[in-house]
Image (tube, rainbow, N blue to C red; front, side, top):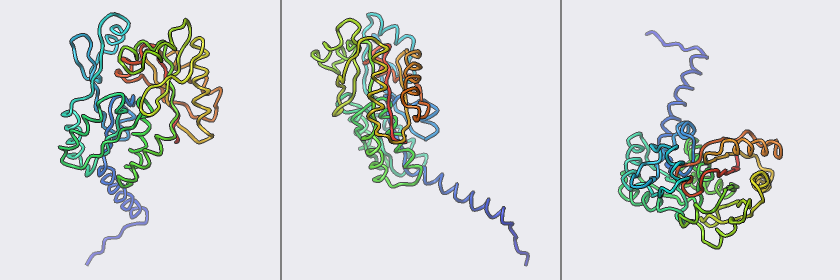
Length: 305
């Protein structure tokens, strides 16, 4: 009888192939879903296997999923007199996202979304979860923007490492609790129009050259402070977000609404003030956030790495 002989290097390759195959299966068992307000760049979401369900934007009488939206047309509408509004994804959009994940091998799904106090997205996701062929845990992140994006990334990394759903939820919650995020806006008018901030708070931003900085507290957008002029406001944005870091190793993200120069300036200020922080992800904000924050807005988020 002829015996099969395998060299040490060949055996190592076989073992590695087996481990990688098992890892791929492990990665498929728990899927992560989020929504487009996470502002995740498409390549980042794809790299970590995160499914992103788009919210809807209504310009005049036309309703479009924001991943198919003409960005230039949206910005023109926001700067003009065309009525613009947003809406949560349909329950069916979530249902099919969950079905696709199940067909790809997912045995469970964690679906992490924009604060329920800002949108009905969680409710739509829960409606679909109740009809899903695999268990779905819907999570209200109590935030939005790249804070939500970082929470989804933390969950995806934990899922890829083979953690159980309960552990992934705990890791994502812990990540979310230590994310620092503030947003600079030119005006609070867009938030006031959309009912996301009260008229008393909107009054804070009406003075000439006074620029508000906003945060999320208890799932709601709240004014944090204000500064005179854009340059001072961006400097204060960097100072306040960085100060809340507490010396931890972090990853950074800067998102903007048609304000690449301001985003670049924020990155320069961040590198100068906190040189130990790695180069940030710089990305346009979700179209939904653009509707409510307005052109010119810049957000900075720091998350434990």
